[in-house]
Image (cartoon, rainbow, N blue to C red):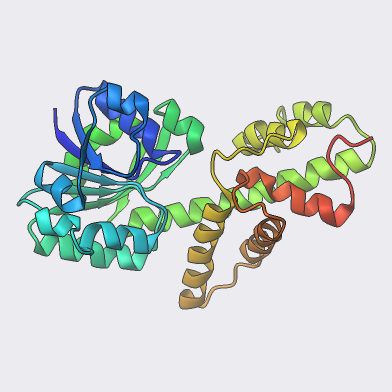
Length: 295
């Protein structure tokens, strides 16, 4: 069992940390207000700052919102790098930019640690059920060391390539997810506006070539009007920003991604930045002056 520092106990991080505690690992985190009662009961320790967490840990896991957050946790004042012991494994499971990830890996390596980028897909449900898809960028040695820990939280774990490759894969994932949410939204909105029973339309589509996990899970959210976040609009906006910034660097056109980003922006303009990303349908409903399921 490992002494693990886990920094980032949000919607995804809380259940992920819980699985590690259940597996017998010892966990420490940075004190931020009141610790989740379940994690406290399972024995998670709270320390003053990331430096103290690093000093108490053999493995560090970060699960925070964006690239600057990872940089602050690792390299800011009182950061992980100040308490990093030789041989410490640093696993970043956040979704951040690939190029800075490579720079972070270099700095951790120079300090004597091993760095792994391991962003995840599967949303809150995947985190709760320990069924996340994990996309890994690492050396072969780093991947081997991280695998027993990642297996506690995920189901599909793939070593994509070197440092930054995991984050590149996650950006591609977020492009596909956003455009599929848009496609499901448009299909169900069309069916509803045409007067069809939208629940039966979804049921039928799930049996054909249009079937997808997003049609299954988010299609139901759209019909049931349940937009409490499993993954927030504002976080998907952040990921599509990474995609579009990368596309400019690569001299690549991603018109569908740009359109999906505009629809998320319309959600944010209607105070929907904290909706689940399935709430994209609301932007399209506004354009159609029709809500799915409306008579």
